[in-house]
Length: 250
Image (cartoon, rainbow, N blue to C red; front, side, top):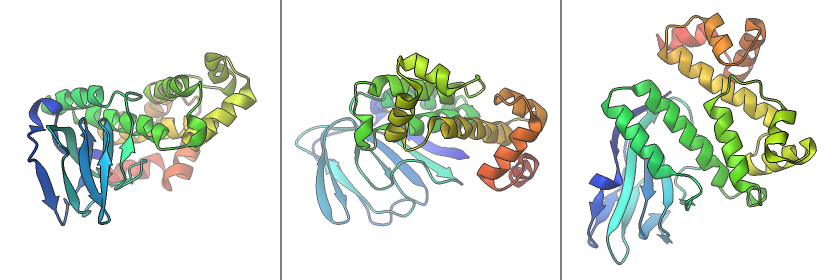
């Protein structure tokens, strides 16, 4: 589960040309930065000049060293804890450009955080990580179907309870089923079928952690018609049954 400590948007994170950060020991939590201006980052002692709309997810304890580059420095940032490894590269600059609306996600998370709706915060953070993972440098991702693939995966993670199938997904992109599977695996590093299961189990974990719904209700809300099938897939993905998983968090 993701648990946000602090968050700042571009409205309250603007700095002049002299801005500089040097934290040799980093934080005792994860730090997600979305840099909206040109900046300099030092990673493993190497100077890197990043373009606007670049992000980096610092691991726990990793040194933070970065500064403005020739003008104003603006970023959005988020400190969070997690008992699971985030699904994007750590300590690495990732240029996302305008493909993913990171600022839009930050505004939504910021609003939910200050309304104390922490379950929504966790869901939004999972959603943004799912989209970021699509732009982490996979060659097959850069195709004429890039935007459509992102929208398809976003819809999957927003509504895992739907009756997703290879046929219905391929029809959305107007491509053959074999070609969809090739595009999807190249873009996200996972097959369509496996990602449907991932989306459902991630949603189930959130419902188990954050609600008092019983396991049968959770199974139905995640798109499963059989609680036995749900329980088997959940245990295969997490190593424990849904009930045991709930006890761990209670």
